[in-house]
Amino acid sequence: MKGTMTITKSIGVFAGAIALLAIAGTAHADISFITDKSSVAWGDYVDWGAVATAGSATTPYAAVSNNGLSATVSDTNGFYGAVQPYSWDGNFSLGDNVLYTLHASDPIIVKFATPVFGGGAQIESTLRGDFIGTVSAYDSDNSLLGTFSLPGASVSSQDGTAIFIGIGSTDQDISELQFSSTNDLAGFGINRLQLATVAVIPQAVPEPGSLLALAMGVGSMGAFLRKRN
Image (cartoon, rainbow, N blue to C red; front, side):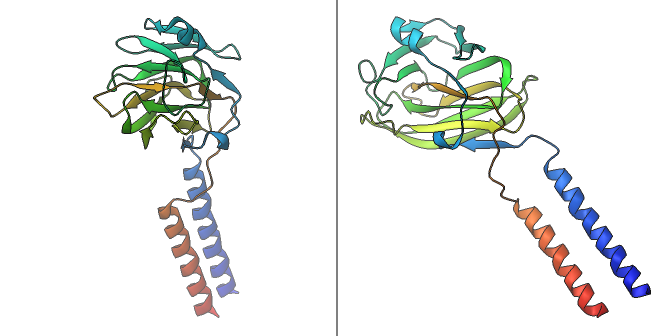
């Protein structure tokens, strides 16, 4: 009986530790990097057709999404608009409206009137060749939620193969997105800004530390039970 009580108590402690581990893993919003546009069911978007038609826009620029969400778009030197392939010869899809800047170090900043669950766009450099695109997300307190980068290549293929960079969250806490590029010799452009209207759930891949702790706990419990038997 004493041995049974000891085993039961140990199992209870172990289960409690697992519960605490699960709580620690879900106490905050999960932020994920999105590189596959088709992996998210985007419910809204901001298209740059007005800027593309005018050819340019002053900063800040007031934009409205397809669902009526207001956003303020800004950079340091103002924007330009283009359409693939007529005034933009890159690897966006034919007919895409493009918002671009001539300075890679000058991020395109999009601030939303109401936070969103995520957002992203295809991005490419105004100069042919390799570049690195970066997207960052901030909450309403201007705290960084996450920043991610992806290498890409700007080519004249006009086939929609420009890299996609986006950020998703399990909470509706993204108040600002920033896009930038590392090619200091050129600017960069983004096409339609996709917006997530529901939680973006990342793939459930346990962190290595959590896996190690769980494996050690299971191994210790197995050894204890074998010893008791």
